[in-house]
Length: 534
Image 1 (cartoon, rainbow, N blue to C red):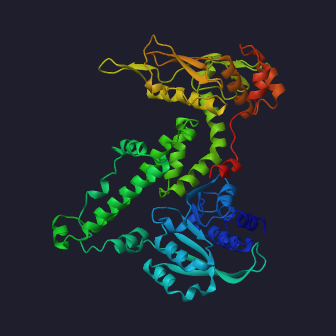
Image 2: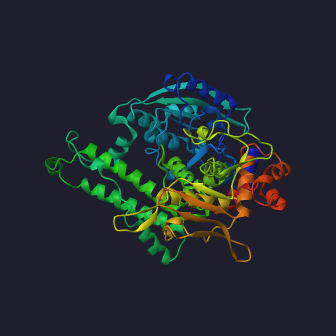
Image 3: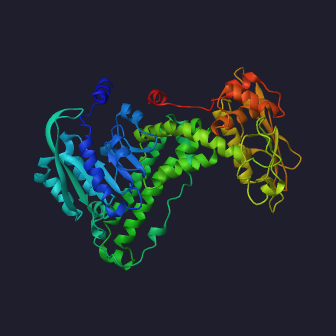
């Protein structure tokens, strides 16, 4: 009863009955025996995902859920991505997964089941619903509209469940065919757009992309008038989505004969509308993360790309204030692993035979030819970076107008160093992005962090050259922290004392206090931090 008690205490009890182990086992066995997933774990969306226990039990593949209870959102495993909060406000047709599962609230099980069956963009659906479902006209019509096959996998009850109930339920498996006329988007489209036009002629609409031109300007204009970023973006998104739908609905008023003469066809319109809807959602999510500097400032370019790929890969999340809160919560919960992995990745991009110093305990040397055909020797370990490093990635170049600028790869790398510094506790809020600096061969740029007293201190300084090299000179304070945390994350430094002993030959005067504070200092965010943000 622990989970139910927490939900009641937080006024988030929506009358769900936690799925029993017996029910989970039946669904899991059916999935395991499915030939479709013999070589790859399926992606699964759980509508009413609870604490994520069902998803973790059913698949090792991609895990998605719709869940509104904030205590349950905080309990979700980091591998579970929240694609929505309020089930009724979500569209499922654009959430492409292998399987959808749901154990819906039984007071509204017909509405939930009908929506899932009708809109599911999946191969299979598993529903845990009352036995009386077979008498539901709504559910029967939904199954018929999708030309789906239905199988009952077993009868169950909740007499021994976490939340006891008299209700008798069945696990119902819905299997979809591949008929174009019964796919989720076609049914939704035909319901909303009563068009009687040709399905055969080609259409150029499917190749038309939704462009982002002007979105940033519109956001800035709206923000001047008041309101926060998320609410402003949601308002603009809803207006744009309504205009998009209104435009397509107007097509239904045009005589079918004229549409046929113009070679406009229903399949082309459907493809174009799906493309525009997905593109519109993706564009607004990208705009949010471009502006949400409290998160993005601490993520490297690669981490941001991974985050956005996770957000848009296989699912296109509806852009609402509630979903923004859930997705940002997911990012925050996963941030710790991002911060640690990106520190290691950024650090190792600087590894070369001229940039490293062995630990005191490491007397191993490597010949130059061992560095020749790979980035580093296979057995290279227990080393630290020099105070000065030469990085062979994206120096400066001159365009056809003679304008000198830093190559994008180099700019991204330097900005990544700043982001990593942020996760190590440095205040980088006022640091200027590399692309905005004036670069040429004679310029030295200093990257600063801000102390608590308001003074700026050097993090590192940089010179870039036309030969593709960037010379970085770190502050002793930063390189000590950087080396300490990389050694800890690599498993080479297991204690503060060991860190002090091993890093005594780095060419930097060893500040014991800095190393001890640096050990384990990479920013960590837990589920309680997430709850406080909601």
